[in-house]
Image 1 (cartoon, rainbow, N blue to C red):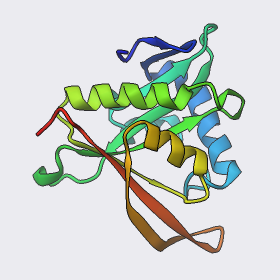
Image 2 (image 1 turned 135 degrees about the vertical axis):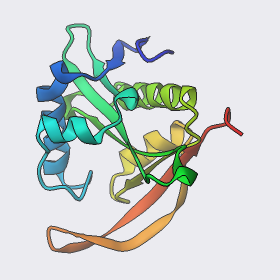
Image 3 (image 1 turned 120 degrees about the vertical axis):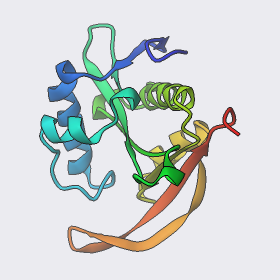
Image 4 (image 1 turned 60 degrees about the vertical axis):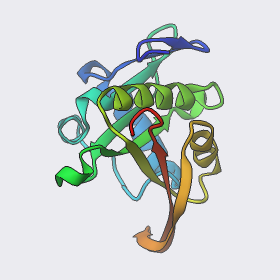
Length: 171
């Protein structure tokens, strides 16, 4: 599947400003559920747009063009040794879960990052987010380890499971 392909009724397209409202609403829904991120509020579109790499961000759409979910990556460092390493986030609308949306988004991200010479895609996932850990495992990510008590979230210390996908195409 390419980044504009259709998978199980889900069409993945490059994310643009026309997706801003639904993308940020889906982000806020994930924040509100409590097991997706340390963030407490979705950013403005301007901040989101500036932080996410345009070539590695996608929206998943249904047949009507409604946004079902999104994936986006950021650089982990400006140091040249880490030029091929990105960190990503993937979020799916609560009503669209279980339909392969996250899998389609992760496939598009893998395609775009490999085409760009990125050798490692990583993420930090709360251990309580079993669905995210499972979809990442199916997408070829492996657990690197657990960062124990890495940060406070609503006054509670939280662990984060560090996962990564190493590109088999880039040696």
